[in-house]
Amino acid sequence: MGKMHDKRKFIIVLIIIGTALGFYVYSAFSEKLTKSTDLSDESIGGFKVLDNISSLEFIRKYGEPIDQDNNNAYDYYYWKGGLKTASINKEEHKGKIMRLIISSTDDDLFENSLQTSKGIKLGSKKADVLSKYGDHYYKSYEQGADIIGYIDHKRNITLEFWCVQGGRVAEIRLDDAEVM
Image (cartoon, rainbow, N blue to C red; front, side, top):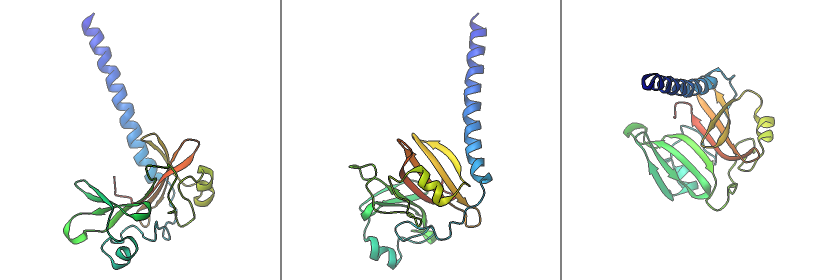
């Protein structure tokens, strides 16, 4: 009786792992299979992916970072006005922006004046995102957010809108598509 029960448990665990892997692979592929959207004009806070936080223009606009989180691959900086960046922390490409994020202040979920080039900001409705950016998007779900993503295959850039409660945008990410 015990062996049969263990075997059944093992099979159930395998099914769960297989399903989770399937979702992960599917979401990664859905991004690759999504038709391209031209994101050449897309910027956040006046800057684009691959700009540098050490450039005079960036320093003139944002000054010194307010706070910082780092990991092995990137330096994450918080700047005045609610901008967050992830930049390369290795020598020759140090400071190159790989991700620009608009996220809320702690006080208010939708409080941030930054917006995308097409005028989407925190608190915008999902329907507004779709009307401005179109129907060629991938969907994902992470950390409780319903994610709508657009990819520019030519430039290798993604633009993601993380939606919460009632389909309102709570975070926006403009990324180099290689960023995990």
